[in-house]
Length: 111
Length: 112
Image (cartoon, rainbow over all chains, first blue to last red; front, top):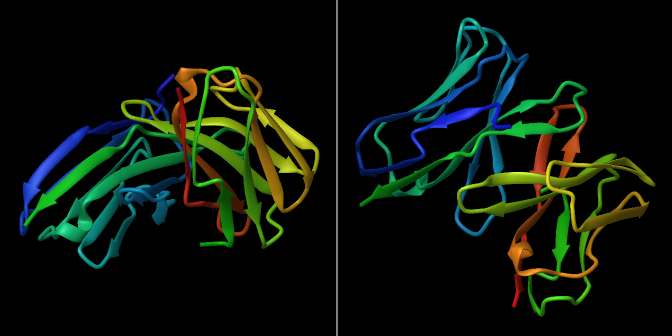
């Protein structure tokens, strides 16, 4: 069962464009993590959002946690080729022993 | 990178042969995980461990077994490899303080 839905699945844009990717769930979650996975490597944590309505910025990346804590978005301003990768969202499972993962958004930023 | 290594990094084997993948960590983390990653399926949890000799199944555990006899090593075994187990396998640890998973570099396994 896929409990986290990410959209779009694929995104190909030109350098300098802005983009937003989404992570949605039908249930409330206590926190959400965003990871980026570059080709040939494992995922790396970008940010954890905890509070409904929270906004966190990481250079050109802006992460938002929905007020109802059922959705989150990642906005990239002026995308660069180095932003290319798979963006994954993940939430804790009920007993906090493992993560539930979305399928990811595969982003390609073309020079 | 939380001191995580995986071995081997690449392996080609034949259907029906046993395969063992090793994950080694140097920082005494309690939680360790084995995932496989395939196009269209994302990251799928195979097994995880929450302490020495304490393991549990993930969502795709059939055909796989694990062992953790000491904190630093988490072994994944394919008793009789099948072509459907061709994949990239990632090991990860979780830091309890920040609830973050750190991943190893991955093992690319091809079963012919």
